[in-house]
Length: 64
Image 1 (tube, rainbow, N blue to C red):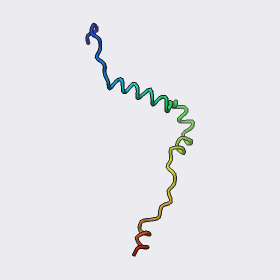
Image 2: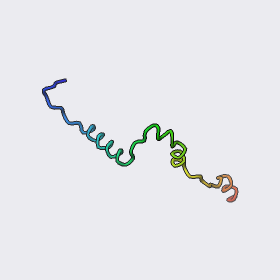
Image 3: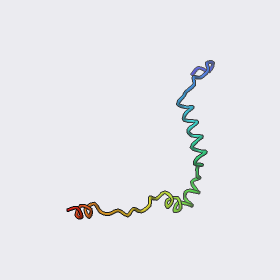
Image 4: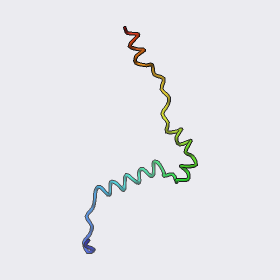
């Protein structure tokens, strides 16, 4: 490593830094304690809605 020379710019590192800053502004990090304490609420919020779908076999039987 040469201490006398200026470092070259790294577009990837600059992008990574900017992306990290945007992510932190949108979704602030939770502490591990907050995650553990609120795990049930977090899991419920992330769960998919239940789907009410007809079986494909039933639709096939209606056509024949």
